[in-house]
Length: 312
Figure 1: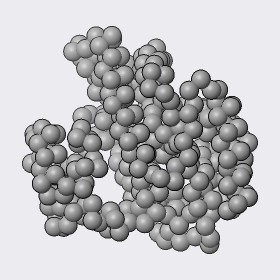
Figure 2: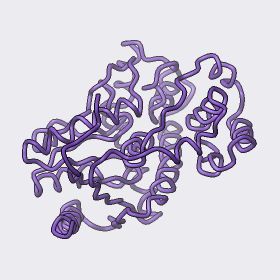
Figure 3: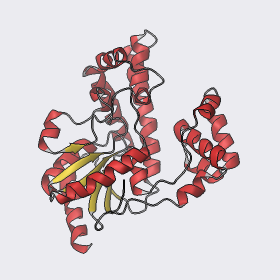
Figure 4: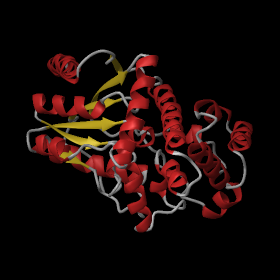
């Protein structure tokens, strides 16, 4: 599918680490600018994972059109290239309706495919991944540092998915993934990107509240249903934070209290990695949401968007 557009269509991007209030804020912004939201949440793509992903519910979707939510069966796959192609298709369609395309989420792999670009690299190598499966993540990171120091410096030591991918590309192509990424290009749209952040203590408390709310809203029942429909450790959806922990609780290996702590801990680690990734974007306009309502933050974003549109 061609990624060409008739011009630099303006896209409003609202991104940030998990638990910074992106969903509620984006809905309010969309109502003010007549926007349509393209989800960049790396797990909201999957059907049947409403509680664990905290995806927009019926009321939010009734207020504002949402795209790329509940797109993939729970046993399916969805990658950054597919996301890039979907965004390339959706942005002109939304703009043609006279609405503002809005890209909203925290999925760095998927946002990167749109905002920074993808390279023509190697495909998935299942045999290599099997060989690497039993190796500890620190060992894999050290191996990557030996063959591609810039990539190792840019990828968090605990980010096994990206470490394996970088090793996979180097093994198959003989080229460093850092070199190939430097040749990548973003989609040909005009992006106005806003990043949401919270102060550290406030953010940790928000993450803890979110973990507690997930459990109160039926996390265990949702994961139990997903397992009955075939969700296993081998599937992409299983890696969603909250699913392995709920699985261990259902199987009697974790108490509810331990499950809650583990979910909060993993979410906090994810938020830190996301924030580090976003901070590499020098064009990102940061907004501190600490102690502010979603309406106040939405007003701030809309005001900045309108000024930018007038001077674009």
